[in-house]
Image (cartoon, rainbow, N blue to C red):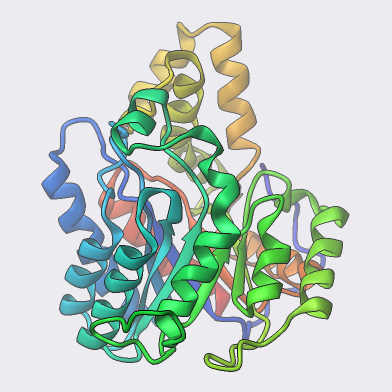
Length: 342
């Protein structure tokens, strides 16, 4: 969406600003180059002062190279010194709870006190991927039980002893879905909330988060406090038009995925504009729909809008994401945004 002009002058923010990188592939680059660019971006984010750098989990999706967050997290943590490294997230239907807990605990043992884990309920993108993962579509509904089993292993209260032991050291976050915000409160975990409704000041989401804080039960082993991380699709540039161009590649990929059933690599925005000239009305409408779900504009305008959203939802942190075709543009966005953020 186009950001409205800020209703007050830009000001510095005390809210931590973090990054989620989905490792989007792009036309003309190898998957290996994409993954190395993710590591470079994390190093850059650390020098800029970002709080966390998270990666995601997507299996057999042509447009995303990030299939194994635990492995990518280890590579990023090895290449950085201070920034917190996390998953956004590890999908519990894709792993046995013991295996997921072992990933988490091993990362904690290797990179003590810098690891965060987001846990989600998503299953494979298509039926063939779900079959390859030995999943059923309904496996997502078992998330509360799987989450509790992972927590018991990490806390040392399961019937077996996790090796290496975690001793409840790793902060946990639930990637919010319709049911999982309440689950996060029940197990004493942080919550990450994102989606197309957020830039519209959703009262329903705000009420859901208020209930999360009211109903939060701290885990006696981890003793985390309620924490709401707001995830937003963001691009900034010197002009609003350029910022919209930066979001165009991912918006077009999302639109194509709805037509062909597969999320493709990102194309150069110039090529996307040419493709849109010959696209169907449905493809153009889907592209516009996805563009409207992001925040694009000058750094000061976007930063002001993000602050308004964070205040509305009473967020404790902001996690910015968005697939940008050119790695140099992506690094420039990170630099300009945090400079405007303060």
